[in-house]
Amino acid sequence: MRIKGLDIGVESVSRLQVEDEVHLPAEGRLAPAFLPEYRALDSILNRPSLDERLPDLLLPQGLDPDLLEPAVLSRTREAAAALFRELSRAGSGRSSEDRRAFAAAGDLLAEDMGLDEEVRAALALLLRG
Image (cartoon, rainbow, N blue to C red; front, side, top):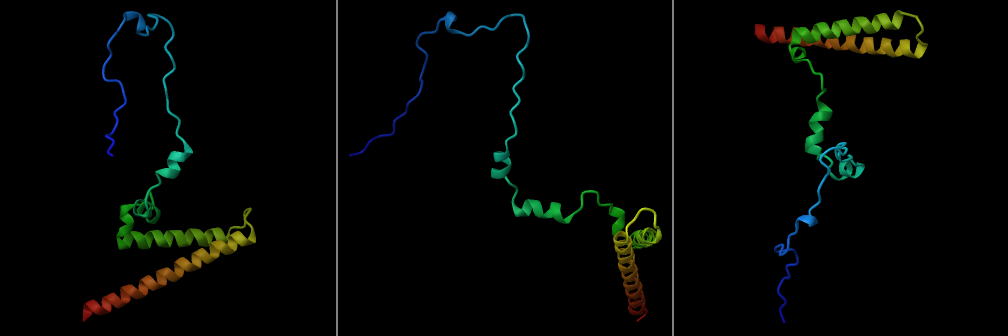
């Protein structure tokens, strides 16, 4: 035995009376605007995929495109290393742990600058032939 699908709903309005319509007052305060509330469930159910989140996690928001030039990157690295060294020496209100952390960051950048010099020297040797 087969049962066909049932369509349940309003097909048409057979009797329409003016009194049935809802009339709003002509004057008076306006009703507050309906603003839907952002629900936490929406953020849970509509989470971005890994492909959408990964670029945001890998690329900083305020990336300066000039840092991609080697000379600008070297100058920025030198300035940051000098700032870290200065902060490690300054004793104004900093704990010894903070000074050690600044000194370690300055040493790391100095080591990185040394490697940068080695790469430049090796590249110069390669270009000489």
